[in-house]
Image 1: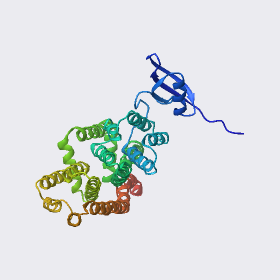
Image 2 (image 1 turned 180 degrees about the vertical axis):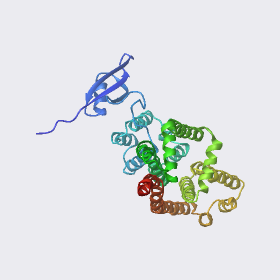
Image 3 (image 1 turned 30 degrees about the horizontal axis):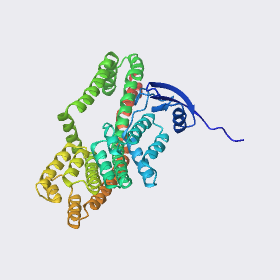
Image 4 (image 1 turned 45 degrees about the vertical axis):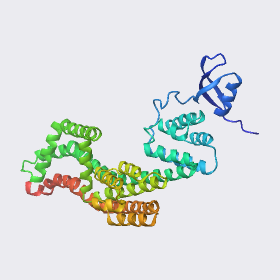
Length: 407
């Protein structure tokens, strides 16, 4: 026996034959059939979504759209276009396969713009929160050159590599931060719950406690009386830091400069900046973007004010007739290998290829450094936990070890 096709309930908005705005619901296997049914009723559909979705764009209760979602969307659209699927149909296929409903609505909105006669690039520019100027410019250049599928593939590679670098850098920071937070929580629990039990027992000994035990008991007593002060300091400090990072350009730039000076993490941030710079410049230059404009995009994508300033200086020199490699060398922030590869690319007329190879090298360097950092951090973190937590435990047991002398 054949299985009945699954139907869905759709909400719609449209215009009737008399010109009145109408709203309603109906059940159908897919949106195309639902629209066909409404056309038979003389309704010109303007908007349609599943009942589980909100008619308002990106309504409440939806998952937010992240940069990873944009990268996945770009790769799927590139795959559809390379397979010869028409653009409007590609939007439909991609939207139906997305689990993030907010992203699906975004794709549907862009499809409506393209169906109404707009270009893919103009549809992207209506959503600058998710598609930056670089993304839109590359897509527009692909449309104008009649090579949209090729350009989408390049943009997809660029987005995937960028997201990979971000994940690696976040991974490098997440592990030690998580361990420190856990150590703070364990320490707080010991001081607030465990140490007071030992302190009450020690009071019955009638003897002077060892200095480490006295210090820990004093910390515990302070925490019990003033725990809300410590918690308040942590919350307020976190809030002020995040607010300053968002609103103060000077503070954010200061933090970025400080990160580059860190002994362990600084090299990772530098390598990731080299990778972003080379990847962005390679992608934009290969797309036919003039070098000066490509440097503008690379500066914004570098992710650090030190390199953003250096790239802007390079852009100024190049616009005045200087060579890219020479201008980079003068800034003293780019590694010799990157400068040399750029010089070879300029001389051979294959700058985009050399930049792509350089980007691959530095991306691999970031992978290797993050993996090495994780291996190196494990014994250091174990030692840190041993000193903090183990020190508290030993301090509490010192009087017990000396109980023979007390008795």
